[in-house]
Image (tube, rainbow, N blue to C red; front, side, top):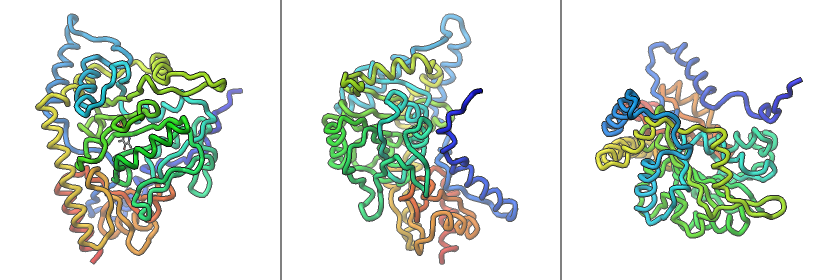
Length: 409
Ligand SMILES: *Cc1c(COP(=O)(O)O)cnc(C)c1O
């Protein structure tokens, strides 16, 4: 008899966005004339930039000829892309990495979810709260998160990010082996100043923990003092893995390409206290379970680093951040309390009158025909907030703000 991995049964059946879609569909059925505007799901809407499209066409043509056809690529990614990453994303910020420390992948979700495999199941984990659900769910699947009860996982340490602490997570009072941080943050849109990130690096060094640093939104940082990479902090190479993605940076959510950095100095230990390089373990894992990202996607990603690509991608990010600025201003005029949206494409909005997230979600949908994401879906500290994204079309954003303004009057 085949037995299932019962840890999977501990996961909630419905994915947050499936619940939202169900409620939105119910609204559409009862209000067929109302046009619904979604500021909910975190997907981009602008097309790929011309430099990327050109590079993809060229790569496709190469695939059409036997002289330039490419089959399996190197598992860690092609050198042309890894060299562009090293030079533009790191060397330009004074961070020296080696090619062997970069693993190109098919997007950050795969690696942020899979990375936990190379550490023992009985390490304990800690996450900022609210949080991107992938970190906890992937750990729950191998039994590291315990059981889900009353909105919390029993074996997870939550680092609350609330109005009271200005969305700056406080260090725990006990050892945590695996620490997940995401900055700029999804869902709150807030960032972590260098001195705060330094506290986490020092905590991890002291406890011999590993930090999983998700920097998927680093391209949205406007404030020059905010770190783009955790390796801007001294000592981070000994304790941190960094995840990046072209998804939000360059609209690659449908193309699929990202990368993970695992410095050679980063070690974890056997039960007997023997140090092991995590770079080596991940390489071993990838060469067994992953056969690389498509050549076409990697050529597309390379084009993001050309002068034209860089400029075109910047314009798209400016467009989204323009939306965020419009939203911030309009929401403030409605007397709503808003966080984020200055160094990230997300706005974290406090529900008026302390309404529960899901209650306000329904009120906003039925009152203004606008879809948001209930904050509590990202963790217990998200209750009383909703997330709005700045990834929409400008006209939709403006209309949504106008509708909300009239509704809240
Ligand atoms: C969108 C997002 C990613 C990127 O996912 P991809 O798999 O690269 O598309 C990673 N982390 C967070 C927090 C995200 O919101």
